[in-house]
Length: 503
Image (cartoon, rainbow, N blue to C red; front, side):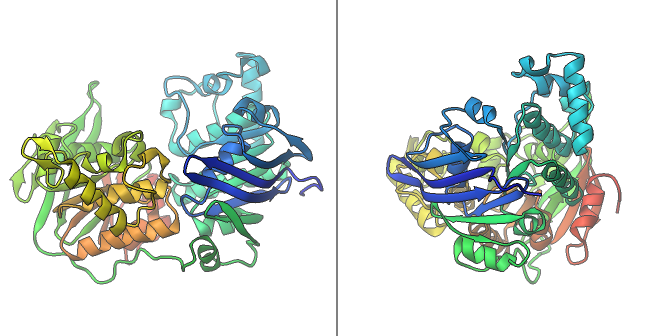
């Protein structure tokens, strides 16, 4: 049960950057022994607030209290010393080290690196149902196990207040249920969890309290026992919850992309893809479901010319493009929304207009003859910013300064420009709020209706079911099931994705 002393009290928190007020007058109270959800659209100030609580940034205004004591957090070390740990959306694990080695890295003084450390790992694992084996290499762990390891790492360092940033973004429904069981165990042991998510149904399922942020400040709280998804969405963005439903079919008889028995082998002779065949027609969205690491990335990279298949054939508009390089494929009409916008989609320290050119540096309006057409690129960037509702001070703003949702809308706008014939959309709405999600869905649906062929890869099973005309499940580099979106459930897909069902 929650104690009388609150785990965290943030009062009047403010944080300003040049030209931007990230937080102002933010109030959040996290009761001890509870799961507290923090929701809000991208750019609402959640990330800045979490960095303040974890000591990454220092607030300009306001106070932080932890367990009733006012504290000043100058670094993550200060936060950890005060019992605050954070699990980031992008895991920070070394694949070539064991579970034990990852756990003790940087914390060797706590329990040593031998039997005492191993015993503490087993104690944490058994207490909270993490099912971690100390001597297993991390590269052999699935996504859900890696996340449990990240949570165990902060517990190992003594955290009693745990910040989870979008913890279910890459999990299938069965794994989400298992995570929530872990969180309930954490709560019953007196730990406090700050749960950041865009998935409102999950927030309602796990949270004891909900705080809503909008435009840098807190705008309200909600009781998950009585609140609805529609009410939360309206608090967040001032509109009703969007739906990914595509409506009537627009699939034509014209095949735009076809893969024939494509196999891709790594340098050690292991198959990353095995006998992959698919066809995407104009006006069709083909959805690919799978637990991360089962060949989705390799499938995209083979289509985009980043890897040449070991065997098999790829055709685009009936032409064999198996051995084409990426630039030629781009110029042939393939738009590409990468799964990691920071690593593969943007130059974070470059302005928006330069990011407009990325991947399209040989195409109008970005070039004139052999030269970059600066004025043409700037003018078209202004169009994208307006048409795709990219909220930025101007096109000279650095990409790093945008929220995740606005970064994603810029990428979507860039890749939808020039009327592509095929769009490869890899996790197009990952980590974006319901407003940005609705906008991206709308753009994809309108393009589908106009004849665009879309390969959609997503960890959001509701998104896959709502947008796709057909869904294929990939497991260990093979297609193991084909599903009809009108009849399949997230649970059915989750079972196929984890090897429990093949259709």
